[in-house]
Image (cartoon, rainbow, N blue to C red):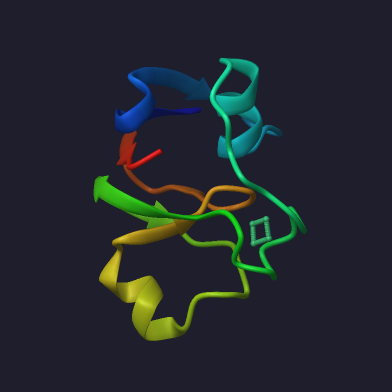
Length: 87
Ligand code: FES
């Protein structure tokens, strides 16, 4: 599990195995825009302010993934214990 702070919403959640960041945030009452939920469409791409994403999507290019400043919250996870995102 890892922690995600949604700065704009003022909410911090634990993301357990088997649950996506988007699902964890929604369960905490945060509105998250998702569409495909499979890492393809890019609807859920959000800005990363702190932490390193574990990219699992097929939307961002390799260069964008290396920049570590965007994440597909429907499917990607975290390599660091904590991610701070602009949702
Ligand atoms: Fe489509 Fe996340 S909802 S990439």
